[in-house]
Image 1 (tube, helix red, strand yellow):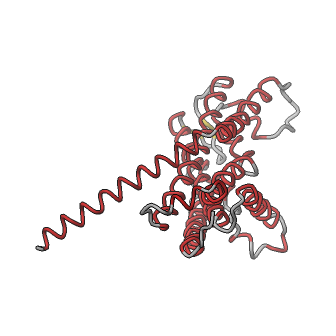
Image 2: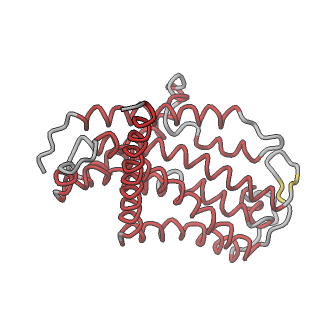
Image 3: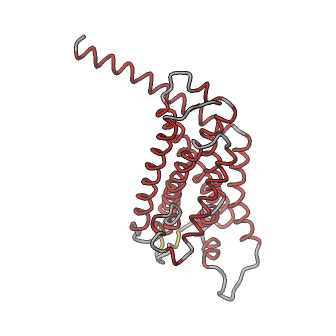
Length: 289
């Protein structure tokens, strides 16, 4: 066989594997977004910006100057509803959603008995884990952007848009402000994707998705608690949740990139380490159910 024929043959093998992976990814996404409990979870995520915007709209204005600055910013520009909602949901609701999806990735298949049958077909375990994690990442991006989208829509509807006053005191146009909201959302989605990698690893350790979900939530809460203890200051920069609030640095003029870049680097490190840990566990796992 000539070199050209070998190359053609290799390409023909790669393309079916690629198409199979894309079909598998599509199946995973349909499973995630087709389940009623996940759709209910998306509705809960959307309820936070709606409740926040309505509460601010119907509340009595405070003229004594002692009101929260962020609430005053909401009344001045509706896009701040999205940012305030992200600040509220990054503590529990969004991590809980990611925990539920990532915990179900492997443990859910094992629990209902489909994992064994899935592995009887020629699907490499490495490719299976890669597709599973890709679906988790896509979910985190969509869920985070969903909160921002609902917040922007309800915020602009109730409070209007126009120029946004950044945390540094300067004003930017509506289009630039909307881009800053998207940028902040994607930054937080990267942090949640790192948590999803931790969840994928935990999911390979058990056949009970509920137990895996609880474990991931405990890890998330423990990180927040440890981050609030001054005596553990040496540990803070390495906690998975430490840099999440750095999305506020994207709302300065000019953008302060130090915090977000360190947050993205840490998120990438968590994603690589825990995906490899999941692979090491899953590659040699004896699937019995």
